[in-house]
Every structure is written in C-alpha cells, then in structure tokens.
Length: 289
Ligand SMILES: [Zn+2]
Ligand SMILES: [Zn+2]
Image (tube, rainbow, N blue to C red):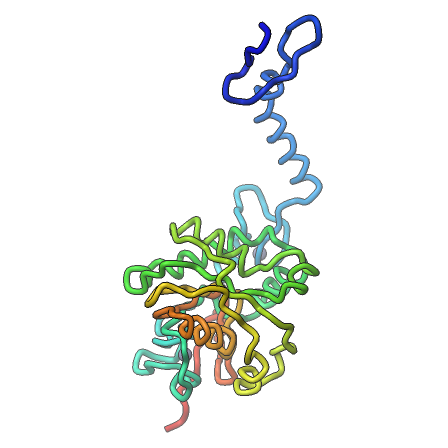
C-alpha cells in the first residue's frame, strides 16, 4: 500500500518498484542473531581469546584470564596504606613510606593489583600493544577493588586521567578512559572526559623522582570549566607510581572547585622498599627503627 510502512517505527523501507512487496528486511533481521553468532565464531577463530595477564590462549570455560593466572593474581590485600592504598608490611603501619613523608593533594586511593611480574607486561600490552581485549577483565577487577570504598567516598563523577591529544590520536585510544567507561557502567557513576585536558606533551616520567615528576607535570593539565563546589571526584588510571600525576590533577581540580579527589588504579607500582614473596604478596618494608 502506498505510503504505509511495512515495519512501523523503523523508518521508510524500500519497496520493489511496481510489485509493492516489502524489501526482505524482516528476514535479514530474523537472521541477525545467527549472523552475529557466526561473526563471533569467526573472530574467535581469527583472534582466539587470550589471557589478559599471561597472554596464553584461554581454554574452554575460562573468561578473561586463565585458571593459573587467576589463582596467582597479585591482588592488593590488607594491610594497605591508608592514603594511597599500597600494601604495607603490617597493621601497625598506617601509611606507606612515601605517604608518611609526602603531603598529597588527593584524599585517598585504591589499586586492584600490585605492579609485578606478568602484570607489568600485561599493562605494557594494554598501553602499547593495542590489546584492548583485556579491558573488560581489568575493569571488573578495578570495580571490585573500589566497591568497599564507595559508601565512604561517594564519588559523583569518574575522571579518566587525560592523555595528550596527539598521543591519543597516535595510539588510537586512552586506556584510562576505556577503563573508566567500563567501571562507570558497573558501579553506576557517570564518566566525564571533557572536564580536564592534558595541554602539552611531557617528558616520560619513568626515570624521574617525585619532585622532578611534579616539575615535569606542572601546567600540564587544564580544567575546562568551573566545577560544582565540593564535588567529589574519582580519578581513574592504569598505574600509580609516586602519585605525582593524580596529585597534580587533584590540585588543579580542587583549584577549580572540586572537593575530595580520590583515585582508582589497576596497579600500584612497587616502591624501592617493596618486597614480594614467592606467593606474589607484596608489601612495603617498615624502615628500621
Ligand atoms: Zn594466564
Ligand atoms: Zn601510601
């Protein structure tokens, strides 16, 4: 019939000229689940799912991470630093060695894993090897680490640590943003990516000490608009080392009106005084008294 849509609400459908028969869209739609399934099977054959941690092929029934790696995941366990969340040696130690002598701008932070062994290589693949398939597994682990803190912290927005625009274009993605979006979906907190920008490229931080890192980051971040006074924010990043990046971000966000700034990271870096046991349990040594 002239003018009548064969599939109301879907928009105009093509009709075969003269015959008036609907284009076989409904048949294609009926087959879509099968087409998707066939596509997924083909993708699995071309790119078989791999373990997020060791990069080995996953066996049937394994999801995101192989059974061996799952059994040895270096979760950050208590006791942990009350400020930055790094594991410490015992419950008598309130702060890690770094937080005991440094004034941080962030309020508190938490990490899912310690940055050791296979985790280090895994993060490297995530950042430089375009291995985004591990993101779902890691976002789930980060959401799990965050959940016990949510009632006290009550963050109103998740802010992924921004990457310099040109660097992000070269890489094709910002892993902190992809993690934040997945975590936001899990914990039901909105993700804000335009609030703070990285305005210039800074030298690699790896070999620098804390003070040199802070100098290197000075003026690097710019807040794009006024923030509701007292708004509680949660920064999301992949690795915490000395805290200079989250500190500098917390500082500029608070200058623009934010209240407490917390952070959530996938891994917390090993400090010089961190030791790890054969069971992959890591902690900061208590300085000799
Ligand atoms: Zn594995
Ligand atoms: Zn600490």
